[in-house]
Length: 212
Image 1 (cartoon, rainbow, N blue to C red):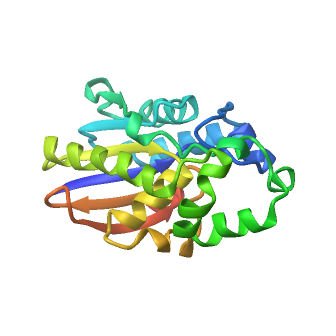
Image 2 (cartoon, helix red, strand yellow):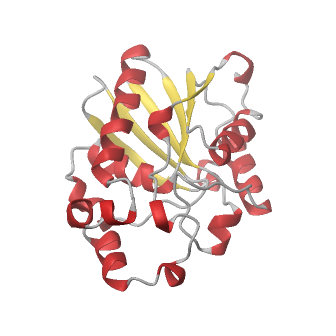
């Protein structure tokens, strides 16, 4: 069985501003974000990870390095950026707040009806469809499970990316991805799989202190 530990990156300056923090923008971690990453590192220090997979975006890579700095096996655990783990690219909205976007009908569809957004709105705003993110991200997990059938893999990524993956990897339709709350920064979710195709959610959005 392969265990995947998913950690959303630490809070960034864009997060603190309350703006869209998609794949076309990046900003440094805040003091809270740095502390959160270190807390996850302490909580998972005793887990012997086979591999660390991370989004190539700096906020995710910084979070990954801070987490692994506390890990007992860090020196022999490869850290690999994976382009499939890039955050959903939010086109004209990236880096802007909801108030700055100022398009209530489009925002309502984006936040509540993913399939309709993909079909009717995404192209207009230059936004990567939810389904496209799923298609590029799922193979990262399938390949990692095939390479490490008895491994423990740490995955550092993003809120929308993981919202999509935690929906489709467990077999739910993409249309349901907005029915659960967004993951908080620097929390841990865990997926398990026996074959790299069928996944089970062990837990979701667990804060570091819950591991004590």
